[in-house]
Length: 372
Image 1 (cartoon, rainbow, N blue to C red):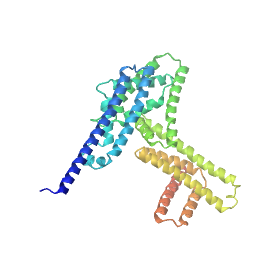
Image 2 (image 1 turned 180 degrees about the vertical axis):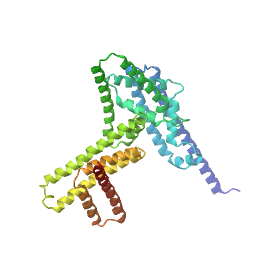
Image 3 (image 1 turned 135 degrees about the vertical axis):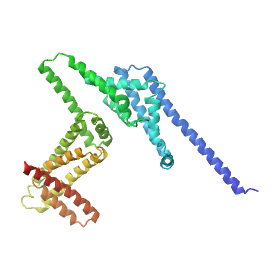
Image 4 (image 1 turned 30 degrees about the horizontal axis):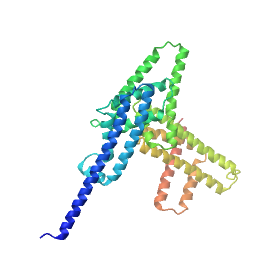
């Protein structure tokens, strides 16, 4: 005779299994509906779209929120299935939930077998870029969002980005053809130089978009720019030069702020007020260290610890630190202040290591000037 407790446990297990299966089926239906909705929206849009002009812009405008909705939904689904992601997917060597969601978006939407989405997507992007080159006003936000999407999606076989496989060659070919046609026109020497100067200025403006990204620490955008510039001859050199110049400007501002603050306080530091001098020194060193931490973060998270970038950054720090004639004295006062505060050994070691780095900048800069 079976135990009544065993029967109760069995029924509870069956009910739990039924509820789980029902919940899973419901979730699976919801996920399918997400993809059906997205594909049908874009399918209808692409079937009625001429990728040139306004239609192409509208297509990108429709695609942007579809992509954003999908990634948001996948993040939510990932959070629901977080335990499965941590345990099952790792042991079974299968894609994680979010990564699988990206693969589905690639296969069902971007490379849809049922709708000409891929063709219209690429043609719309190329047309928008061409319109901007011809001084037409376009919605850069939509273009950027779609290119970011292509950079995030990867090919199943090569593991390279969809940007590189589907779009890059077409983009380079269209760019080559555009400038070939542009060069056919008859220019005298003066007009030709003006046209070249105009093109170079446009490229310089694109480089300057780095500065807002750095200021707001948009690491994802910086990372995408680093990848894209790596595909262009001397692209990283231009990016490296722009960031180094920005470091010099920020360092110059730190030096000028300290000088102006010292003057505003009535020159007390110069007249022997040691407390004022210590305050100024602490402020200067802390601002320099904060700046160094910021660009160390960029180096680690964005630039894959690229040594040529690091060398360029170091030279920029050496440049503006050496411009402060009291830099060595300020660092010494900063160290003395921290060691007299009785901080923990770990904190003192961290401060010491950072201060030594600043001293090295000074030594290298002055050694360089002696050899010249």
